[in-house]
Image (cartoon, rainbow, N blue to C red; front, side):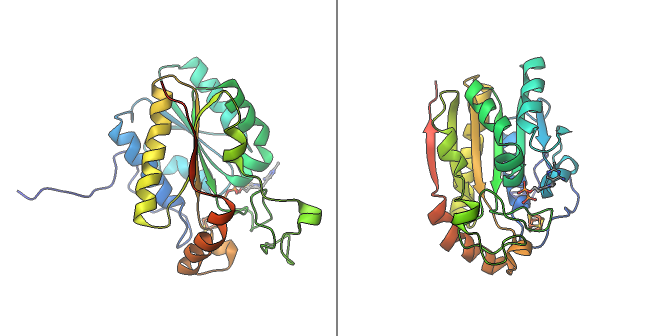
Amino acid sequence: MVEKLFARPDSLVDVATHYCPGCQHGIIHRLVAEVIDELEIQKTAIGVVPVGCSVLAYNYFNVDTQQAAHGRAPAVATGIKRVHPDKVVFTYQGDGDAAAIGTAEMVHAAARGERITAIFVNNAIYGMTGGQLAPTTLVDQVTATSPYGRQSSSAGWPIRLSEMLATLDGAKFIARVCVNDPANMAKAKTAIKTAFQVQIRGEGFAMVEVLATCPTNWGKSPIEAKKWLKENMIPQFPLNVYKNIQG
Ligand SMILES: Cc1ncc(C[n+]2csc(CCOP(=O)(O)OP(=O)(O)O)c2C)c(N)n1
Ligand code: SF4
């Protein structure tokens, strides 16, 4: 009898995704699904998905899932968690969703210490709508709406959501990770698992920010995009556990 060592997580539906080649949403979905399997919460987990490229994540996660209007995922998750405190509720959001149109919802859910888990995918751009400048776009980064590169004189500087939320008492676990190589994927998975465990123990708000590529709107090949992320995004958005108050 041959033992199967590697398989699709039960919490991930066996369908092809719509993501572009080299897009890391798929990797991040897989890590979330592996954690859900390992914590044996597939039947109790409820996901809330955003606008943005991951709007169709409800087709991919094999758990109960609700779609939320622009940026409102933390508010929707708050409602679900308060009505069903026994469920494990998570949001999955991009930077346009969570750090632009939904900043207030994210900040206030963290400030209230909502017992939810937020997965925040930062690819430094609005992916779905054609690559406009996002709050996380780097200074001098060229986007569809900043053809001369982001100018701090008119568009300001990138928002570091993890550092901001870590200042809030209601936030119990805040980490920034990335999935550019196997070692970082393992660290990302550990952080995602901790963020779910913090909720399961009823401790408060937890968020994992995952730096990710958008080769399509960065105008790069998947390999060039990974290199650009490492050389440009990580220095701007340092990988770290910014807050870890457990127990
Ligand atoms: C009120 C309103 N604001 C904004 C939009 C456009 N919108 C839909 S998806 C999206 C981009 C979300 O991008 P992001 O959250 O960065 O995720 P990504 O696609 O990069 O994964 C935007 C701006 C809209 N349709 N309506
Ligand atoms: S546009 Fe960017 S974020 Fe969206 S699926 Fe393509 S690579 Fe991924």
